[in-house]
Amino acid sequence: MTLSEHQEFAGRRVIVTGATRGIGAAIARRFAAGGASVTVTGRNAVEELGPGIHVLQVDSSTLEGAAALAATVQADGPVDVLVDAVGGSTSRGGVRELTEDDWMAALQANLLAAVRLDRLIVPGMVARGSGVIIHVTSIQRRLPMSWSLPYAAAKAALATYSKGLANELASAGIRVNAVAPGLIETPAVLGRIARRAADEGIGESRARDSVAADLGGIPLGRLGEPADIAELVAFLASDRARWITGVEYVADGGTMRAL
Image (cartoon, rainbow, N blue to C red; front, side, top):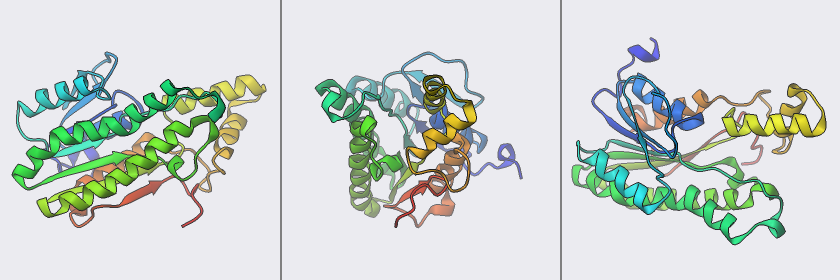
């Protein structure tokens, strides 16, 4: 059975934030392939992502952007699935080089964006007695790098918030889970690999290995693909995972070696 033939999300309305490229775009396409009506957000205008996907150009990491998104989508009906995938990091070196703006930007994008949008979408889910929320965290919350410490700290806070939200909303019929990707072939990671190759005068293959080594390597031998994360998110949002809530799932090719 191909994804296009698998209609497990038919009739469902899905929001995926930060989804105009990379992991978010793959998640959006996976839901659309399953028959869902999907709204995605991004700060920049993009070409059509595919059938069943509506792109809303807003910055969902801001209070105004989250409010505009929630109002636009909920005007057409209730939201069944919310995937908080917006986020990102800025590499500036160690803690002595990080500014107040660096920390605030990381918290806004990687923690508060999810908190704000959840707060706007949850009441509708509670009123219906059903819904799924999935937060995209990162293995860096347990493997913090000095060059992206604000990102790692914000993702750690997001994982804690996700668990607390799951505990609170379970009795209302709402499931909340988190997905922690490892090193994925996103535009940002591919850019980092290209810079490493240029800076060190090495080939693309060695640069990939070098970037992976920053996190301790990948036992399965390759970077993940955005579709790898999308499949996990789709499972957690589906009725197949109807008894799963309050869990963070790691998808990292074996990078995290400790329990």
